[in-house]
Length: 492
Image 1 (tube, rainbow, N blue to C red):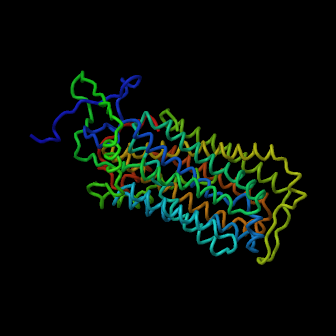
Image 2 (image 1 turned 90 degrees about the horizontal axis):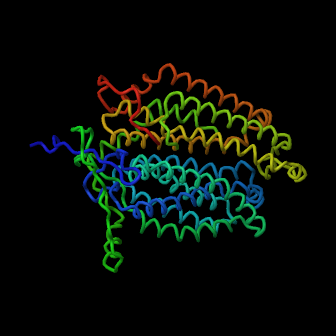
Image 3 (image 1 turned 180 degrees about the vertical axis):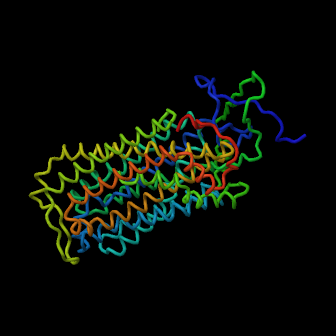
């Protein structure tokens, strides 16, 4: 008898989720990350979130001390901005390479190597307060490690948790990274000005990384698992099936159990199949139209609800409006206090005079930045649901669809990092040529409105055509097969 023809009962959750069909359906293999005990899943997530939070703080570590850095190195504001832009652009490249490498060797080795680059770059930055070139080298080394955590962490959450469990974890991931990315410069700036050296914050980060890396090594096992040959239910066979419940794993804490746990945490434990074919899917995801459209609509500025066309359109429109209000109001308000930049590239460029800085209304600026952040977060909430709607239309199975969502979402992040780096690098040059910050933000606001209208119109009139093109580009399925009108992704 063909093993693939055996009918497997649909598996359901436990407790208050006892009537929830598990998505994706787990295998019967105890090594399947979906079957891990809950404590193991949560430790894995905690170690990755801690590392991602520190990386978020590192990305913007120099934002609040640009004047100090420019004075220290005797360079222009453009060169200081490059210290933030260069590692962001490098992380876009390493993010792509990490996505490819994870399909060949697994996620755990990529995480470990990337964390080593980040830690080494942070240590290097502690001694780079006297040389601009040394500081740039340290920042680039950090960027080499950022990309893996930017592109793979969401896939790890997808590997480990069921669909109905992901919302809380994804929200926690988003809140932590956004908070650390934009709150840490405020604390770092205060520390740097009081101590008198911007490298002090790198000393603090290095101490935290000394904790984060052992956590990653001991608490983050490999989450990639090949279910292509596992016995997994797809559709119910009888009108009644006995509910399947995950077996609770009881582990007695002892010396032997601790040794066994550490032995399982090998740097390389990936045993996937068809890895070459899977690795090709990642670059294909870049060419999928939905990837570009999601990137465009969310570039400049997690829910439990099914993202229908109406919900998606309203969410995008609302997020774009909030981002537009925050962007224009912040730019116009700040632009009123900006002085002309110095034409010389040999002296530091000062945008705000000390007198103007004292006249700024900080509560108002905080509100405007908050509106911009709220708009960007709202747009971000639409990214994975929009990708999931496309994948569910063209993919032949849930596993294929989730892999496609992960690949396309990785490319959205890679493109954003690349654009963010280019944006930070070019803005100091563009502001004088564009007629000042006011003219620049008006232009950006107009561009965002145009992009939003274009994307919403394209999805409204040609949504299924775009999905079919995604499927053709990524080679997902025979498109002559009928597909449901509604996505089989109810959440996320």
